Image (cartoon, rainbow over all chains, first blue to last red; front, side, top):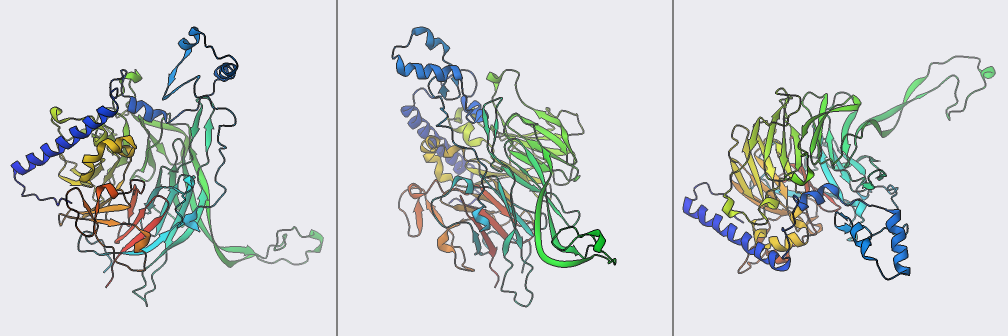
Length: 116
Length: 448
């Protein structure tokens, strides 16, 4: 681990900085290789917006019924694609929580183990 | 021997206690989400993901046995917040306790503020060690006596009983935050406090729950223009008109409430200059400040970003006066840390009582002590393997690359699921509380 040395020369500091930037850019290149479309989306920071939302759980009865109908009728009319919305990471119509999927939200009746 | 001495390399830290279950299978509710000493250090509160608060109390030292250091034992535990569902927005409201802040003690009872994403609650913790006995109209078990049978009067008296600690919610401050609350901070005026979410900061009076003043609002008119969010906020320890808030872009704004009702215009902007040509995809993410804390003396503030801790002099906005690397070896791992979301982990930091040493957590259950006065640092580990009473903690070393020396651990062997996000330092003594995922470790200074 580095100790903070106030007597470090400017040259050494500069080299360290350059090293740091090199490392970061190497890591960035690795990421871009894996995910070429990262950072190209328009409309403000995706990261920030994702952070603000923290995963809303939408239930749309229309989508729910459409999905039920989907399983009966495999062919999707083209018009339905226009109705697809992008909310957070999920496209409604695709990830629909069914009553069975929703976890039970009950308060903890058990005491904390820290108090045990 | 006890005192707010340096905590760096002079001090040897020893294991004192560990709280929580040993098993590796951690229930989500048991994940510790906040740790805070009260102003005297006598009480230590923890909050968890299950919405529960556990308060420990320091036992009064046994003067005849100085070797036997005071221990923290359970004082009170209660369910602070419960899971809720916002039907209008289809949003789950987690019961996880994001922050606990103690109020300075005014009378026999203790008060603390605890908050989840949306609601802040003021809890009163009081002791009952006496109960009235000898009522005229009631039996001891509470049943009413038949008035016709009463022939004499007596004076009820208080008799001692086993200590009972009761926690009751005294105020509920709700419906003031559209976004998720990340900070609460009690003002030095002991009447008001602030609560901050991603985009707004509100000022409350401790007695009034049906309204609060909005003092900072950084929400853009068009959400597409959103470039930064508020990550933490704190009141100045002595100046009741001053507070700071940090952002996801690595800046800190100091605001003066005397200047205007809405403090959108900062009085000071603390930002370290950066060469734009040096920016990488990760630059902004790792510069996001996860915690900001004023020093006890009110002259400095400390910020924690992903890889470093910075100390700022309130009189100098252009750059920090000190920068400490927490785990620089992670810079060559940013790609994988982004993929596993660890790059978004929010580490907290804290000062010791006399502002000479700062502490922050890292991965692999490591935590770092950074001695400002001695300009030295040490890495320690909170582990079940160093749990013998008064066992001295051995410094840990991470090998960044190349040949690994004996006793060193290589970066690739670090366990990124073992994060120490929350730590707290006793306000006067060298006693620290370190939270791993589901355990609370208490370490103390070695007494010779």
